[in-house]
Structures are given as C-alpha cells and as structure tokens.
Image (cartoon, rainbow over all chains, first blue to last red):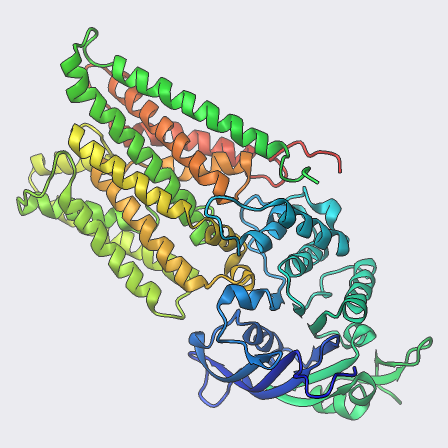
Length: 277
Length: 330
C-alpha cells in the first residue's frame, strides 16, 4: 500500500501490554506488541491458540479496557491517541466485530444493526431517522444480509450472524474493522463471499481490516500482510509470501506435521497437512 | 424503505398500548366498584379502594419495568426484581423494624423495609464497582444476598411470637392492604420518575442485549452503564417492595409476555411493561380482595397462582425463536 509522505498510519499500536488480573505475574496475555497498518490494508493476525490474538484485538478497539487487568501502551488512530476518545466515538472509528451474541432475547437482525445508528443518537426518545434506516439498509445490502433483516438473531446460523455483525460495524461508520474469527463459522460459500467482500472493501472503499484467524490458508487467501503472535509477543510480520514458510511454522507450531506448498492457481503459499518425506 | 420499522411489531405495539390502557382502566373501575361491601359510599371508596388501586398501579408498573431492565442488565431472561436479593433486604428490614418497634412507617409505606433494600443495594453496588466482577459474579452475589436475607428472616421467625410471624408472613406474601392514599401517591410519583429514568437509558439496555462484548463493541462503557441501571432498578424494586411486600411474577411475566410480541427494543418495550404491569397487578389485587369474600387473599399468592401456569404456557409458546410474528415475505 502506498501512503502519502508524512501521513500517519490509520492504525498504530505501540508497546501494547496487558495481563489479566489473577493471571500469573510475568505472564502477560499481550506483551509489548507494536505494529502499524496503513489505510486500505487487509492484515491477518495469526498465531497459535492462546497467543493473545483476540485479546489484542479487544484491547486495540477498547472493548477490553486496561481497567480489567493491568496494561500499558498506546493505540493511535490516524496519529492521534485513541484511548482518550469517548467509547461511542471510538466505536465509530475502529470497530471490534466478534462472534459473541448473547442470543437470549427476541431480536431481529435489522434491530441489531439499527443499534449501531441509534446508540449515538441525540434525541432522548427517538430511535432512528430515515437517514439511519437508509444507512442500515445500505450496510446490510453491502454485506449481503438484507434479506435476513426480519429474522430473529437466534434463528440465524453462525455464518449469517457474522454477516449481520459485519453490517453492524459498517453501519456504525467505522473505517477500521477488527474481525475476530469472522470466517470461522461459515460454510465455503460464505467464506468465499465474505473474503471477497472484505477484500473489495479494502481495495475500493478504503476500509482497513485486521482479521484474527487460526486458519492460515483462509486468512492468507485474502490478506495482503500478516502479523504473527507467539505467546503474547509479536513474532514476525510481513507479506504472506514472507511469513508463510516452513521455518516460521516450525517456530510457531513445533510439533505440527505440516508443510508449505503452492496454490495451483495463483501460486501463493498454502499449508498442507502431513509430514514431508 | 419503511418495511422494517413500520412492520407488524410496530402496529402490534400500538394496539398493545391501547389494549393495555383499556385493561388498566377496566381494572381500576373494577377495583373501585368491587369490594367486601356491595354498596359502598364515596368515603369508603376514597379511603380504602382508591389507595389500593393507585398503589397496585404504581407497584405493578415498577415491578414490570425493573424486571425488564434487570433481564437486560444481566442478559438473563430468568432475572426478575427479586433475583438480586433486594427484596430479601427489604424483608429483613421490615422484620427488624417490627422487632425493634421502629415506627418508621409512613402512610402505609414500610420505612424499615426500604432501609433494608437500600443497604442490600449498596452492598451489591459495592461489589459491582470492583472491576473484574462479571455479570455472573454479580448475579451470584445477588442470589447469595437473597439467601442470606431470607435465612435471617427465617431465624427471626423461629424466635418470634405468633403475632409477629403472622404480620411478617402477610408481608412476605405480598399485600396491598396497608395502602393509604398519601403513601400510594408518593409511591406512584417515585415509581414513575424512576421508570422514566430507566426508560431514558434505553440505548444502553438495548446494547446490553448483545452481551457485554457486543455492548462494548457498540461503544457503551458497560460497567458504568450497568452500575447506573442497577442503582435505578434496585431503588425501584426497593420502593415497590416496601409498599406492597413480595409480589412475585409480575416482574418476570409481563416483560416476557411483551417481548414475545413487540421484540426486545426497550424504547418500545418499557412503556408497554409499565402499562401492562400496572393493569395486571390492579386486576390481581381486585381479584385478591373479592375472590374469597369476606376474607382477603395475599395478592402475591394470587399473582403466583395465576402467573406460574401462565408463565409455563408463555415459555412453551412464546419464547421460541421466530414465534414473534408471521414474517412478511421479503
């Protein structure tokens, strides 16, 4: 991604550390992680289970505050301090899109996405104006989930809920989307569609995506760059070509019998199971 | 464009508002007209029946709204006004007040009960303000407080004389028989203002439906929102309990009944809860007065007896996903 000279990156993470309360001292969930992401980039955040990927994502977005443990470090949005902003403003800049939905109460998909608009509303007893409804419908159409609008969230499959959650983030106006395992619960059709959608959002509309995944093949299919975590520390970062290779995988997953081959069509690195003889 | 918002649930909520107000008016009329004496004169109506009708409306409204709010605050459909133990605090306060002969009662309102509720609320908020205590921890603390309060009440009852036990029992089962006009009006004013206070936070309540993480992703600072809402709801429960004792099921049933029909968005749900809670408790209290004339049933027993089977019915029919409306074809 080319970026204009002197313009700060859209997302900068500097020396971010965090340890949950009650955890073993000296074993932080996230330890002095720093990286930058330019506008329009599609970055995959990869690493073994428990390496702090999700925690890092929640920390960056402010969904997980430092007050729930002890943490330090800085996140900058377009060069300005991000944690200093009020929560509602933060959510409209950088939005965390997780897979957790409580799913205890009747709530339609449309109502859930509409919350993204009504949450910042100023008038006390009015939910949304025509502009808000338009924005919600546009976001849902973009994510291909407009026809799910009337359905109860509890009726939707995990993948459909992910689409609704993405629409919620977009409807909120955020330009930086932090996706937590967004592709994991989807079938092949939805994975392909969501992947293409995210790629198109980054390329054509200037969105920035940071995708957490434990599925390397899936994430590297669409991501342009990878950030690797290992035991809460930044292990490596670079293009998919640079980081997806046998030595790196050996460092991260020492015992796993996998090897790296080539995609038969586009030639990108792909991971296959089985030991190489 | 307007298909989603002007959908069936919008129309249904309007008709539910109308029906609810109608039902409430009917219940008020029945409550004023019916009673132990067939041809009551105006002074009897004003002194005895009017206060009860006002108090029943206020408490029904308060219980239903606090129930709906607490369900959202804890993202738990089984929450009700008494889950958090506030009511046990009130019961403990009332019993202590009776033992110590504290004459803090004002116009039918049990001052010691409200004091007890307040103390338990403060304990709960103290726990809540320790960061790191999640929803489940808070809920469990509430349940523990509830057990603590009720076992202390039981302990007291083991040593008390039979007169005291009789008084405490009636109070524990819920009764509006102590209603006085002034106290009922004060309760009404308090419940209405606290209810509006909760209603004005509908955005936070909505967001909490998505769970802690979902609400935080929407840009709500969850712990603060939860504390504020807990304070408002606990005060509301405390006022309701000190006015009428432990009247169960209104706070659990009315919100569920309405959620199944108009959805869970609180801007629409909470006013409906208020109307239907008031209507149902007014009707239940009238029934409690006249069903076994010349004796009077505790209204808490009536709401539980009618409420429990009805609730199971709603559970079987209404909580099922997708039962909310015959969906429009997209």
